[in-house]
Image (cartoon, rainbow, N blue to C red; front, side, top):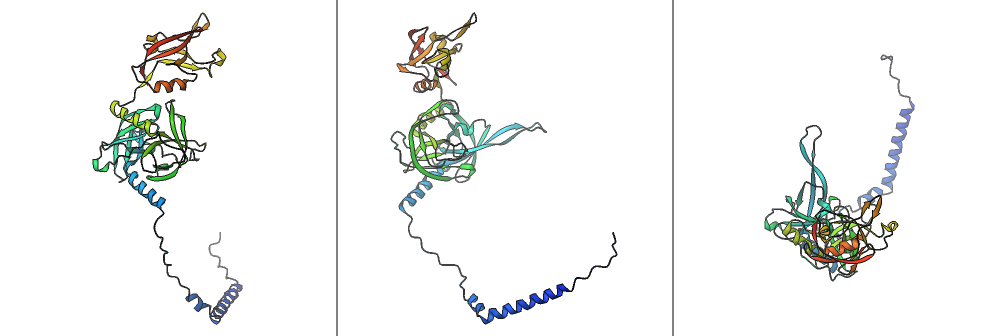
Length: 378
């Protein structure tokens, strides 16, 4: 490489081009002035425009604003964390687990949310509308209804409990308002109507939740545990699930009804965890055991040792000498037929631990009725 070479002189054509551009610019300027365009340009008003007065808000807008302002202080943002061991230091550290919504149940600091919001978390931080954040303590939960109760030790003046309504008299077409924290965006309001009633969905614990409210108000990840309100600003449901293959709102959301919430939450606060009544058996329903010749009822596969079922004398399925001897088949409880496991779970959910029920069973082709005192399960 020759570093001493003399730089090449620019071609003379470059000077001609510059001269031509300058001449064209002078010509354009002269033409602009001769046509008076410069004065026309200076006459254009570039000051900001006067704002047109809006007037009063529409009545429905004003009522929605008032509803949100009255109810939103009761809705909280929940961030959960999980403890993990650092691979290098071997120290326990907390990492974010997820986020969701909840609402203040009373002025004692109890917060209601979905069980699946706090499931698997080791701690939770609850942020109020005033942006004050408080460490939460788990009071208890009920997997069967996907409800959980946390508690924060915030001052009473920061705690505004939500107004409670009833879900027994709802009608399809009523307006509803959902407040929550979708995608971590706190204090978000969406609106819609009740699009269906008496729905049934499965909880994270595998139990059927009955009388669920269906709504087209947008419910997205992060809305879970938030409040579904009626037009009076009262709680009518807890936003729980969406029906969407994409995982975002498709206009079909579900809420646990307020009457269920008002039945379960006080028990959780009182006992720490709602005790569910059960038999202590493993079952197969007729739809799963058709190949075994079961046409109706629930076949008992196993009876747990020491359970209510064992004390009542219920028989399980066993294998003897290489042959299957079927156990009892539960056909009904208190005269109400059962064909699916969900049927029995619904009936048991109406009863309390310690109550006695009558089971109608098929034992080797013979109809038998047994009394059984229900036990606490799960």
